[in-house]
Image 1 (tube, helix red, strand yellow):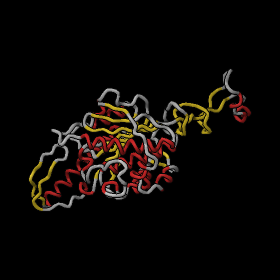
Image 2 (tube, rainbow, N blue to C red):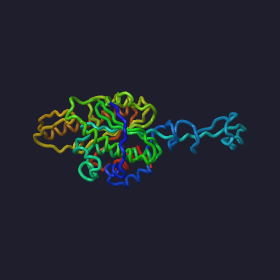
Image 3 (cartoon, rainbow, N blue to C red):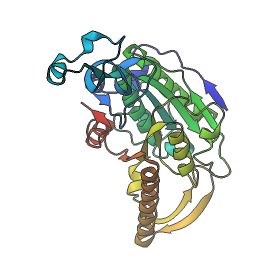
Image 4 (cartoon, one colour):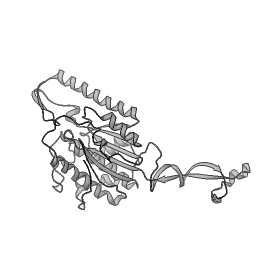
Length: 337
């Protein structure tokens, strides 16, 4: 199932929920999303494309032919060689920034459900330092989306789980940020409310990307925010996106309770995806085996990303999300400025 829509934003509402400290938005306005390759967009923007155009950045020379703009002749070269060459410049175009947020059950592992939109935004999961993976992913997506809108890029957003994708139409301009924030908040809340009590078996990550009309038709940059807790389909999803000419950034979202669990004694561990449980005696040996399995899984995803030419970044929801955006994303070359 694929649906489109963007909820109407109430002024100041969605930003207040996603950004308890609104000063972060002002800092994002001075940053741009890094693109690892020159882009081909459809409208004017700030990105250097792989086409030639009218920006101020010099690209190359070519021989003058009748009909060319004589104002682009480099007279210094003509004086040295006696031949007329014109200067060519890189075109500046927008890039399509696409945000894919996983709203599967495991993404709500660290905390309770999303409260209704407009419930205050300062308590529970929507607190400033919440470790809920879904909220963290939404906030990171909102940051990237806002930086894209402020940088004159086209921004699209979609939330996905199992075999369903809910997305909003493309947005342009900083004035569209409220619609983006409202969509991310409301769409995730709606997905949580409509979710079945339990599912039988984990769907592959590739399932949502196989739906008709989901894959992008134009080149761009796709940010995938997920905890990666899928038994299969990760490689297929990455391959499908790269085949669709996407510059993919895989943001692996994990919480403190997963990275460093603090469990001891007899426990009943429940799979949040299937609802099935298992009695486990948690001790040092079990925790050590868990840490080894987690490290192996993360390395597996990292290698898949490397093989597909995708960027991989692991984030810890125990770290304030503003620090992740302004420091970790910047240090890994995902954001500039």
